[in-house]
Amino acid sequence: MLMRMSFAAGLVVITVVVHALGLDVLLRTLFRSKALARTGFRPVTGMVIGLACWLVLVHALEIVVWGLFYFWRGCLPDVESAIYFSGVTYTTLGYGDVVLPREWRMLAPVEALTAILMCGLSTGLFFALVTVWVRNWMQKRTASDPHASIRTSD
Image 1 (cartoon, rainbow, N blue to C red):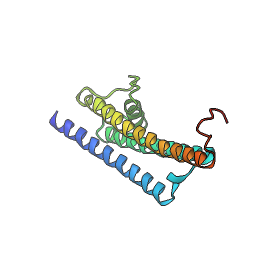
Image 2 (cartoon, rainbow, N blue to C red; image 1 turned 90 degrees about the vertical axis):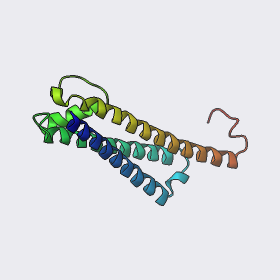
Image 3 (cartoon, rainbow, N blue to C red; image 1 turned 180 degrees about the vertical axis):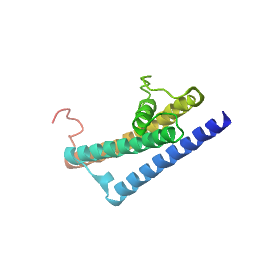
C-alpha cells in the first residue's frame, strides 16, 4: 500500500510540474507577443480559442502521463484502455466500464482530485486572462467614446 501511495504522490508531483510548465510556456508566449494588450471582438475571440486549445492540450498530456503509468504498472491491458481510463477518471466522469485492479484502485481518486485542482488552476488563469482582454477592450471603447459605457447595445 505504501509503495502505491508513493507512486500516487509522484504522479501528483509530475502532474503539477507538467501543468506549471504548460502555464509557464503560455504566459511567456502571451507576454512576448504582447497578446494581453489585444482588444476587439475578433482578436479577443481568437485569443480565447487559442487559450482553450492550449489548456486542453496540457490537460490531455497529464491524462496521458497517468494512463502510461497505469499501463506500465500492468493495471490495464493496453495503452488505449489505460489512457481511456485515465481520461474518464481525470474528468471525473467515472463511467465504471474500465476499472483498476483492487490493489491499485486508490489511485483513481487521487488522479481525480489532482485533476480537479489542475482544472481549477486553468479556470482561474482563463478567467484572469479573459478579464484583462475585456477590460482592455472596454477601456479602449470608453476612451474613444465617453458614452460607450452607458449604452447597452451595439
